[in-house]
Length: 144
Image (cartoon, one colour):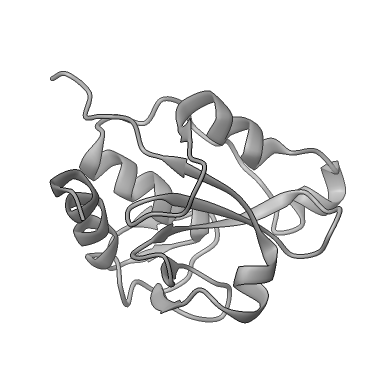
């Protein structure tokens, strides 16, 4: 693992145990999956490049568009393979928009926030492995 990857994984692990709260992004207080990524971004890159705006829990189903994938494409670098510290996007079903995200801690594990739970580190297996839609790298740290 590179020093940059270790920095990102350590930042994500700092969110472990944070309760799930829709649209929140406060370490130890509450976050959803996007809030987790936003918090890690602030720690390892700097100020957020754009605010996500308000969104409902069914935003992807209601809009039917790839809003999360579009934002990732604008601000992150696509990766050909999974690696520690990567941003991972997931689809709940084939053909549906990507609407869940997390941070890979290895090629076999991921940290994510899921409704009804807290931020956890789990094996990248089962529905997570099957739903893996895209892999990205965080950009380098912003200049102060």
